[in-house]
Length: 351
Ligand code: PHE
Image 1 (cartoon, rainbow, N blue to C red):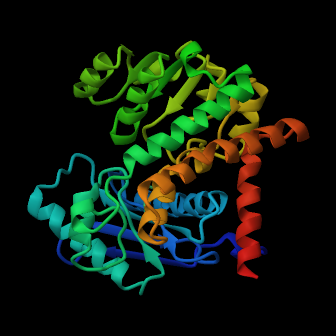
Image 2 (tube, rainbow, N blue to C red):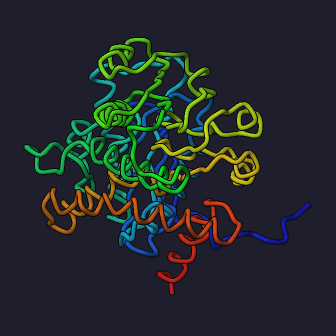
């Protein structure tokens, strides 16, 4: 059958898919929207069963970045770079440099329509390498002229979101009275765990990497398997690893009362938001919760604000989320309505 309706409104503006000339690895740079300004989004280096899965991920992640920027009130659109590694493939220093230069060339070819930053599998030093091929990078180390590692700022935003979430769900923003299951102790998850420990919260934590157990021990968190962490009997689940964990299969097994974390694309499909609502689990959209990194980096690098001013903006995530949660309650809808709000802003920007 021939499609009679192509949804070109939400279609990506530009997607580059290439086999890196130096690395031989599949590289995708997806520019979802520049309606509000330059598209931004991190460079992810991750394993995928097939390069097509990396392409699919890049399309989803870049579209979510458009929503993230719009809801954060930034004059930017969404994009993403994905380097799809075959299962089991590791990168030595030379291979890493080769693939980052390949990615840098792909980004340079977009003439400033998109700028990259760190993401899963990359950090500030990798941005210096990419900057060897294109000036359009965020979050190089401070000594190299950037705003530095964004993960701590993303974590600050997650904490702000957790305060707003707890106020809405439990009637108090006090985190010391609550229990949290932090799933994923990577750069952002590790910071979130420490900050929750400092706030006096009761903690459970997990990561597929056993070596992260030390982080959990230091924070006084009980260590469990990722599976048990997902279904832990806690007040709040904090997804801080890869996305797609909330599905029609997993939601009925959850025992938390609320969910908020920095993992991108937590829902497998949009309808899972309704399922969470039916199970009386209050879900905070990751497009709001995870915005601390881009808010800080753009404030400092594009708008010449001080890090202190930028951090105050990151704290604004609490108000943005509180407003979305309140509106959802008042209208009997779900917080997933944040997506429509974002698209409305983007459409408005286009005109
Ligand atoms: N990877 C983060 C994100 O996608 C952080 C980031 C900061 C990305 C700045 C681009 C620019 O939100």
